[in-house]
Length: 215
Image 1 (spheres, rainbow, N blue to C red):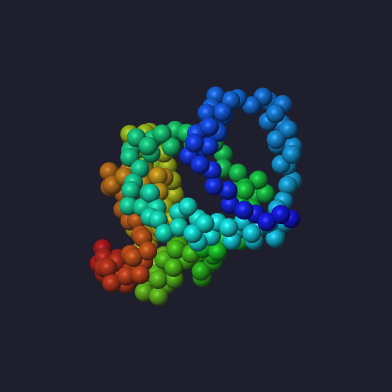
Image 2 (tube, rainbow, N blue to C red; image 1 turned 60 degrees about the vertical axis):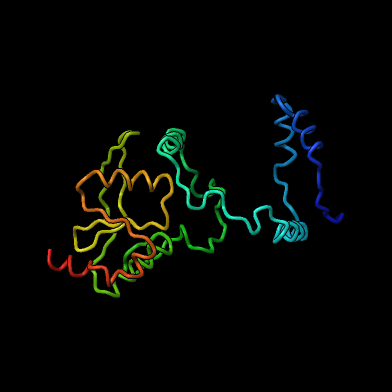
């Protein structure tokens, strides 16, 4: 196999390539040929290692740079557009899922069983373990709640319930879907608490035990 070399195209060359492809529409026959030529194609382990080395460290265009989305949040208009775009789309599951069979190092979607309580992901597992440590009665919530916002009506099932009445939603961060839930929950009187990593670490010191026993 030939040695992979990183090609540097000049700015003028990039503009010429861009202009040459602008407005170009591939025919259905051309699309089928591209699909057929790439179907079942697999890179060798040697090729994968070379590509990994090539784009690691200084080869990565984002190396040493701050993420453009760090500290930023989607506007309500953007959230609405994302929500509308996802309506009617079915998320592929099982063998149809592109991540099927892949190892999840961060345990984001892995299911755990902690003393009979099902937990989805490492953060939920830590929350249940913290509740057990501090003697807080916790169980998996099975009841859906109905919410309404400027986009429309929707429903979802909070993760857990403590003391038989306090609903808990465990989140690592507020993505578009979680932010929509968070904003809608603030407008209703249902007792739902969003728990983040720092909240879980100090679960025994933030008054939950006292409030649960006294109420």
